[in-house]
Length: 355
Image (tube, rainbow, N blue to C red; front, side, top):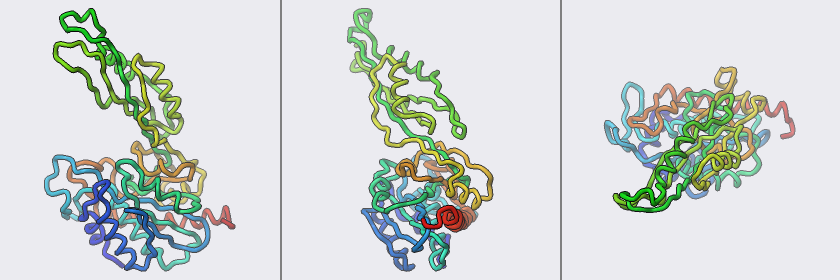
């Protein structure tokens, strides 16, 4: 059996900023092949399957990381250990999850667990999600999925979506000294931004309320000119009880500005707690109920497939300086994934013996 600490350090030590995952995919493919997994590949995406019968479970992790932010105390591309914690870019989000999945696959490799487990590692999760969007349709029929993300092994049964809007407030130019002859687009945008600040939507049981957040504002051509255009971007982290088209229509009706949907391909997701994948994950975690996740992930690429999100690490460490994961968290994550696969195979086979 491979050394968990060495595996994690190796994965973190190979840079894989989103769009540049090739070297890590090459290395991981070689490792997996050396352990007798029949690895298949699509670009920088890797996948392999265990088992020959029973319900088919997808276990999905991503290989890419964000660009390093400022504030690291050492080189983020050169991982280092301190007090059984490994520090390095992507160790928490989400190479620790990838390492835990690999360790779980090794533990399950020679066992007949009564199900089928498809382990998939994707590229470009941090940017477009195109890795999963291209790979998942090629995997064939699936019964359920586990999305590996740092949740402290808390089982997330709902996830926020992402709706991105571009708003344009239009006015009329004039010399600032004769502002009454024009219409200030910035003032119009400011009124709309104030409206967005107090706009409320129906809350979700696990995820709470949805708020529209203005994330960029651009305007003005000259210091002496009343601006005739002000553009601002709005990020809406939606919940499963809210439809993106209805959200966009509601916001459009509330604003003076013109509203255009720039992106709505990350829908909010939720899984019925009665599904076998939820019960299997909760049993593996030793908890009674699921929770919600505020962050988007490749779950949004899975359509109506019943899924949960869970993994070692802490979501609040992600995309921050000196990101870390402990060896204990990694080992607990591997044990959790192994138990989840076994639980799901048993529960789903009992409910659908011919699946």
